Each structure stands twice: as structure tokens, then as C-alpha cells.
Length: 122
Image 1 (cartoon, helix red, strand yellow):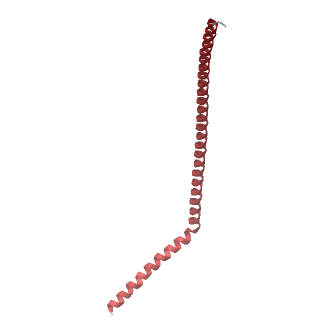
Image 2 (image 1 turned 90 degrees about the vertical axis):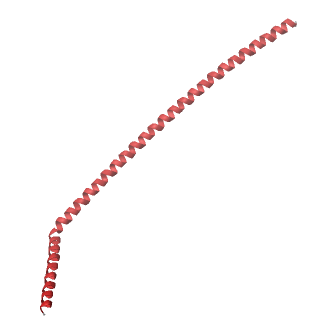
Image 3 (image 1 turned 90 degrees about the horizontal axis):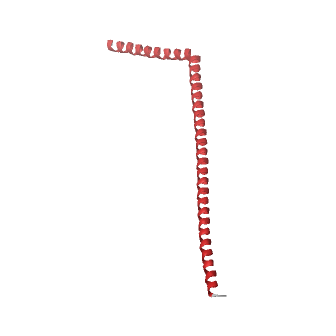
């Protein structure tokens, strides 16, 4: 083999090596871009799913809160109706009790006033 053939072969090998390096760099850049895009797509998908889950959780919490508030209102209304019913059923005895209590106080005052008058006359 002649020296010129060896040089030619070495130059050809160098050209091939440069081409291989360039192709590898291009391939790496393509893979890097695809990886970045894939990562961004996965990140967007995860964020979208997280937002959707958060919205669903908030909506469920809102519905639960509304139901609980309605239950509380209904319980309050039922309690109010029960108190009114109890009062209506017992109003006569309550009025009688209060009237008797007031009458007893007036009677006691009258007795005390009568004793005071007798005591001052003696």
C-alpha cells in the first residue's frame, strides 16, 4: 500500500468520523428534544389531571356543605315547630301557673301590708 493510499484512507476515515460525530450529535439533539417534549406533555397531563381532581373535590365539598347546611336548617325548623307545639299544648297551664304566682305575690304583699298596719297601731 502506498503512502498516498494510506493518507487517502485516513482522510476518508476522518471524514467518516466527522460525519458520524455530526450524525450522533443530530440524533442526540432529536432525542433530547423528544424527551423534553415528552416530559412537557406528561407534566401538562399531570397538571390537567390534578386540576380536574381538585375541581371535583371542591365540587363535592361544596355539595356536602350545602347538604349539611340544609340539614341544619331543617333540624332548626323542626325544633322551632316542636317548641311552638309544646307551647301551644301547654299555654293554658303556663298562663295559669304564672297567674297563680303573681296572685300569690300580691296576696303575700297584702298580708305583709296588713301586718305592718296592725303592728303600727299597737
